[in-house]
Each structure stands twice: as C-alpha cells, then as structure tokens.
Length: 273
Ligand SMILES: Cc1ncc(COP(=O)(O)O)c(C=O)c1O
Image 1 (tube, rainbow, N blue to C red):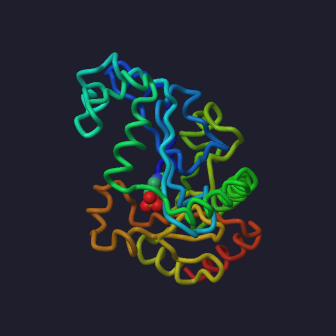
Image 2: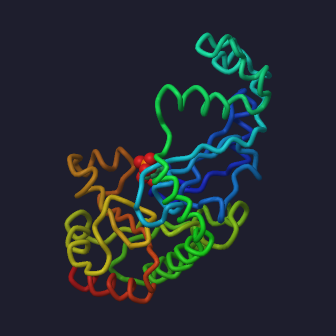
C-alpha cells in the first residue's frame, strides 16, 4: 500500500505480529480504496484513508477518515491503552472501554479527540467527498486498469531502467496482490526509472505535454513527481539512496484519460531524453 514504492504489505502476517504484541494493526488504505482491498478481511484492526485522493477523485478538498473494525480488544491489553481503559477526567470520569466495549477507540476519536483538535471536515468538504464516493467504484477500476496497461508498456521501453508496480506479474508483490486485492492491479500509482538518472528524468518530465508535474497523487488527471528534482531536491544522490529513493525514481499517477493518449505522451517525452 506504500506511497510511492509499489510495496504491498502482507496484512495477515503483520496482524499476527501486532496481535502477539498486544497492539492493533492500522493500515493506510488510501491507494487501493475499499473497492480494491479490504484490510479487515485479513486481520487489520483500523483503516485510514486520505479522502484527498481517490475517494474525492478530483482534488476538490483535503481530508481523512478513520474506520475502526471494532475487533480489537483494548481491555485485554489495558496497561497499553490507559486513555481508553481508565476514567477520563475530561469526560466525567468515563471509561471508554467500560461504556463502549470494542467501540472504545472510535468513540474516543470522535467524542474526545475531534472535540479537542477540531479535526472534522466542513459540511461542504463532506459533500464533495460524498459525490466522489458515488463514482469511486467506477473510477478506481479505470485508474488501476490503465495503470497496468501503461506499466506493461513501460517495461518494453529501452530508455526505461525499471518499473515498480505490483500489477506486473514479475513484481515481488504480485502474489500478495492476488491474495489480498480484488482484481489484478493495485491502483493507478506506480514508479519507474529513466536511464540516465536525475538529469534524464528532469528532461523527460519537462517534455511531457499531457501529464502534469504535480505533487498531488491519485487524481482524475495524470501527474508525475520526481523526488530528486522536486520534493527531495535538497538531497544529494547519496542521501537519496540512503533514504531508499533512487535519483531516477519518477512517480506516475495514472488518471482517467485514455491510456493510449498517456502512452503517446510518455513516448514523445522519452524520445527527447
Ligand atoms: C497514502 C497516503 N496516505 C495519506 C496521505 C495524506 O494525505 P493528506 O495530506 O491529504 O491528509 C497521503 C498524501 O500524499 C498519501 O499518499
């Protein structure tokens, strides 16, 4: 589920380790969305999403959601969660686990933390997310299918050094995709490298006509991000490598355009490298 590397977590394995240590497993499921992956089915306890991405789908608002499976038993590990188990002086001595059982976490999150931090969407933002959710099941499949098509095409290109996308059958994460995802593609986001490193990547990005250079991701419009010249441009090649970011890494977020148009854009930009 990682952004941007294309890594897919073995949810059941991590859930087992988390539970053996008395902690819930929390997964950021922003990229697959619940349409393509439902982490609760594999033992995850809490799921988070940036609604800013596919859920909205059109970059109209910023927000997030927390979804609690209600499966984690907080009282079994009471010493680790005093904020949920012990009386809360800011709520008349209420113990969330006593009053709400397995819903203790999500009630505290909404009743207490939202109250104190004000982390609630404005009604208009909620309205925008709601509109996005109505078409999510159609859009995310299109994003994922187009991305798979483009990833396969990129693999055939001489100027492309590598492609990291779990939808590709030779990805080390393809088996986990098959096990945990609905469909054969994880989402619309992939990474790839251009031969020639940082300089070649910059030339490639500057040559794109349809695909935008944008920090945002998982949007209706296709966009690219090159950390070495963009979000992480202060770092040297050695520092980038130490952070696990190859200097040639380009993140491509495949939008809802015709994938053939996107391939044509990438093809003409590759010719200029
Ligand atoms: C996978 C993932 N989760 C969460 C976030 C956080 O999104 P926001 O800043 O809109 O809350 C991002 C942002 O890029 C993301 O890519």
